[in-house]
Image (tube, rainbow, N blue to C red):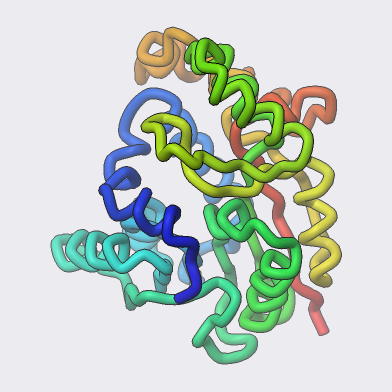
Length: 273
């Protein structure tokens, strides 16, 4: 699989397993699940989770009655997803190493495609267009694509909130991110992510539309709450969490605030004929 060595090295350190269990990652998980529940076709439906990592969403969907196939370009992720699937009462149908730009899946054979990660690790527009074209090819008429991008301004907000801007090196990375969308971490500094492309909100929606989908969105996943300093208090599992989620939901499509969300989701509907 063609994947930049620094991306492979980043994920080979096991950074993704457990990332969604606390802090901003937990908010990302809660809100992503909420959007999946709302935007996916009902179970039983066949879902192809492209770039599904260790299987956090794939296994959750399988437990809810979906037939789920996972693929990821990082062998470690596939091994982790396979192990979790074997331990689950309702396993995945499959977990394989694969490339978003070359899906080894039959035409018009799935009801939904998740691309919750591939588009921000495909830094060239032609590669993103190819991945989206592949998603359209494998979807049945009227099928659903859910595509996620990282906001162009995520590193700026993170740099301020986490004080990374104390480093001149990170300040230079942030300036390049805003100017071009191309994120690099040449020193592999922990906490500064890895090679990626950061979308403007309208750009992500346009790429989905250009691939032939009826694009709806973006939806802010975390919204401005992703930068909250007291995440544990925000996600208390009780009344405060419910109020916070309601507040995020209320502004999830507000154009003036979309860029303040670390992650953005666009729904694409495949043509019906």
